[in-house]
Length: 207
Image 1 (cartoon, rainbow, N blue to C red):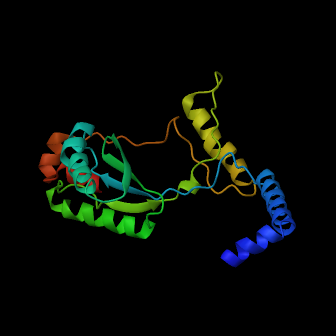
Image 2: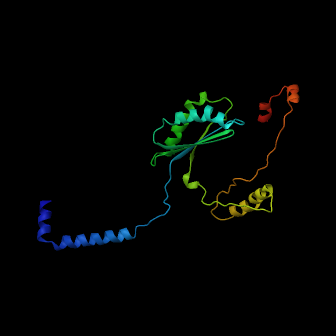
């Protein structure tokens, strides 16, 4: 190191030229550095879905959501927990710190849910734990309104016409509709007839 310093002092031209070249290359590299408004960052995310047909949201919160959240909270590297509860369904989304192996995160969440499985109501469906692909979220949203059609007609137009045309566009993988109306069947039970046949509403619902 002393020999290099002494040589640089005796021959200052070469170090100066080298410094200028490196400085110039650094400036050029900085100016050509690409900038992405929406960088490609994949967050490790895991979802837990637990269904209990017919259960009220308040029951789902106290009997399922709180117990599962308490068990999941002990997992390391969890950045955020978001829970959505609707009638008959609990959806819990876990966001892990960037760099957490997604396979390990799924396994840890599945083990945490298994620990409280026996404390959950017997009527629930088997909990579904799966990884979430953040890069696969929707890239475009459209709002459709009309005053000349009924909600049923508009929903059918979206499903039968708009969806099919969008799926025909190269690169489009999936199209889904939120809102509107969907076809449903209402079954009204006769309590006297059920009693005569020895059936329960749960058995009818299972069929």
